[in-house]
Length: 367
Image 1 (cartoon, rainbow, N blue to C red):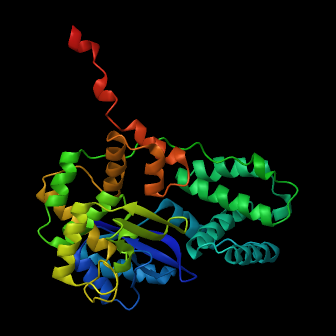
Image 2 (cartoon, rainbow, N blue to C red):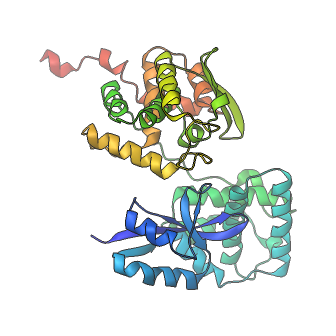
């Protein structure tokens, strides 16, 4: 079966790039390391090349001997097609002012890039139509004739709507009523949750104490992958039995309780590896542990535990929250621990907790 690299457009270091995502492959990584055009980004957690069609074609030829193909996401293909379309100088100037406004409000470069690309896609769709002439009906037409017609994702549609609403708040336009612009109906997907027995199997599988400590800390503190890898030695407060999670999602700090069993495990890990600055360091001891390597740690643990479910690191966070709820922890505390801004985000775990369901007796049992 031919392997694929998923190519998507992104903004990195204030420049448009092609992000390359693929399953771990040592030969492929070696090829990219030896390529003068490809670079690794810790921020993107992926390899990338400059947004250049010639480089994309060159990479395609280099990958042929490895039986690896390039697969452009639907959004990326459409964005590439849109690059050949132009927008008016007036629109370019207004978008430039919009970018300056976002930077002054401290929006991340990733968000700025996403909103800018989405906005240009919307403006280019209407060709020569002036920005001040665009109205709410145009947004509905765009959703139907561009997003739905091309089967683009609800998340992409949300990005475009977010960009439009924010842009027209900063650019005077009497034709668009911001409050009347609606987002797509959200999908109600339940989080994936593991049983305590499955979690125990996964966490006990790694022989390497560093690997075991990383997975255990993610589960026992309900951490996101990036939050774990951003931890410094000073973020572990053993006297107060807490972990300080700094500048997490939404640029917020929070504290989470630290398990005594995990603290013992961390002390054993510290003696064995002696980290200097980052709690979990990479091979060169100067950088953070690599996100892709952490994913490999989980993959190997699943294989050893004979668990065939498509488990991701985020499943451990979902499982932690659900197990807390089943143990009787108040939802308000779970919300604080997980760092959720809205209580409705945390309430979704009530739908996957089986504590109440276990008390329900099926009428089948009384037949």
